[in-house]
Image (cartoon, rainbow, N blue to C red; front, side):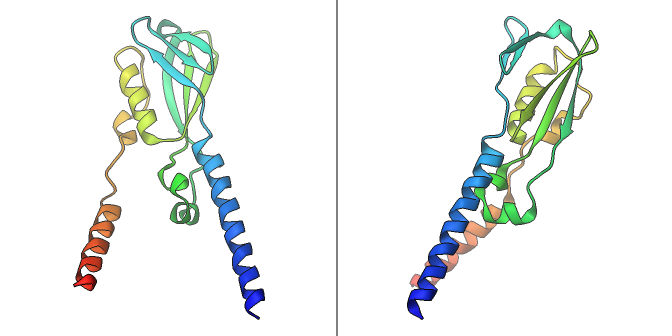
Length: 149
């Protein structure tokens, strides 16, 4: 009986580790290479150079976000915020760039805002402090200290 329970526990641990790897790959490794050169006034999206003067406007599309279940069990899913920044060009084309964190989107849009028209509220992508998490840690530390004395 103990061998059976041990086998089940080992299988559950393997499944959990596999699932964590899958979440890490899905949310932490899913993004495009993006760089802004303010001095020469261009952006690089996956190696494609786009001059600021070629961009008509920028819009942000929210992609499918991690579920509450994924966020509760995976650190990479907890912090992920999947978005696609679309650069609409003056020639009618568009270039898309995937971001996986709010802070990355906010920094990019904030840097581009003086030079390019942005059709979204930049401040909605500004990262916020997770007070619930901080309060939870403080409560856990206080309870741990109280039980130790």
